[in-house]
Image 1 (cartoon, one colour):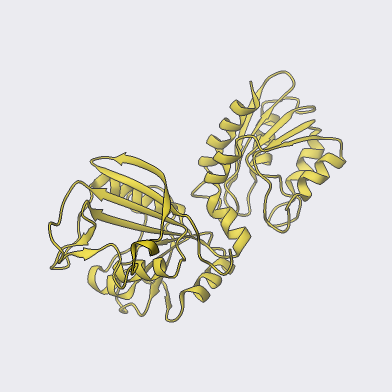
Image 2 (cartoon, rainbow, N blue to C red):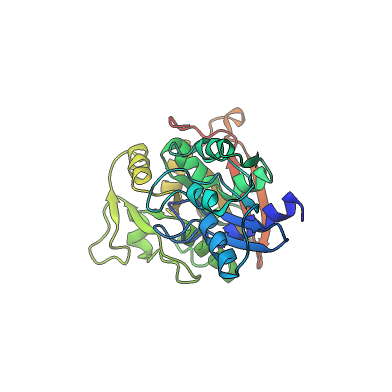
Length: 335
């Protein structure tokens, strides 16, 4: 059992906590006892056990001896009292001998303090195993803790020629069922979802996770929603986007999903507030210039002014493609 193999197992455990743990980090933990027994844990809902305690409790329930065990965790164990006691206390009490962590926790309450306390207690600490995979998995959490703002994902659905609606305004449905379920999974992973008032008036969306398991995100409307709109209860916001992101971040919104129309998406894009673009591309063509583009408003005035990024992944989803792009530079005063 190599460190890499066990950390991959911890990452798999962490993935099961993705839709339940926020605003806490979705962490996975694997404990390997001296006689080779293996126990898994993942962070539970806020106020309940963190991954390390879940794995330790699983070992104890099986009457395993955890003294001298090695602990694999995707993030630095917490060292402060929050809704729950520090995970460090549980590790000290268990008498583990080694902790292998993928990442240091950037939260100001932790930020290396957990590692320092473990080493001071004579526990071997190794950091960095599978760090790239853990960073990708925890990207929204890491961004939130470093900037105070939510990780902003703009979700788009378009034809191959980049149109999101026909000339008459109809847009349902450009993509197929599997792409729509994937988009609902994004909702389940997000703490809040944002649309413009125009989208609410035109489509009256419910913005729930009805196609997948998981809690529905808080709903935010730019402008005012009609009183009988399905989006209620929601936060209605008029004003600049940056203060909105500050408020949402302070309210524990770790990931914000923007599903607004071309005007809202274009505004987030032009202001450099997008941390990730997720586009679902259908093998279809609008075939003209009269349909709605991905973004409305003025674009780059010159080819030299293109806002470039990098492809994170391109994945077939049913008959469509999911294209994930991260901007090369996130233009945010908080970054």
